[in-house]
Length: 85
Image (tube, rainbow, N blue to C red; front, side, top):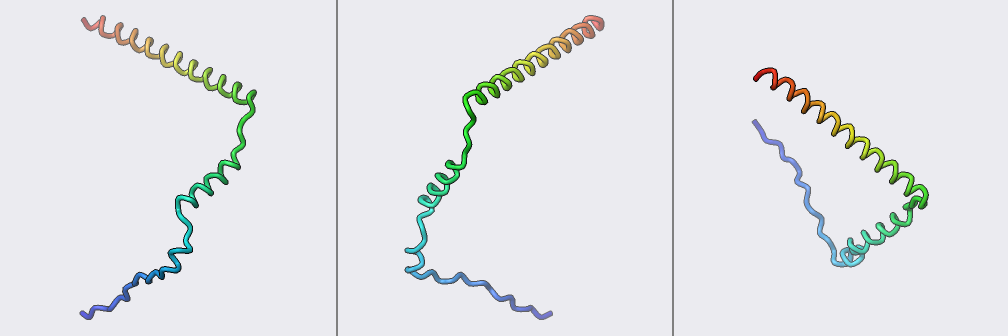
C-alpha cells in the first residue's frame, strides 16, 4: 500500500504591521455592548407594575396548588398506612 501525501496547512506568518492595525478586543467588545444597550426598549412604569403583579399572582397561585396537592397526598398516604397497621 502506498501512502498518499496530504498537504499540511501552515500557519501564515503575521507581520508586525498587521498586529498593530487590529483593534483591541476589549475596546471592541465595549463598543459593541454600548451599541446593543442603545437598542434596548425599557418598559413603562405602568407596564412594569402590571407585569410584576401578574408574575406575583402566578407564583402565589402555583404555590397554593402545590401546597393543596401536597396535603392531599399526605392525607391519602396517612389513610393507606393507617389501614395497613
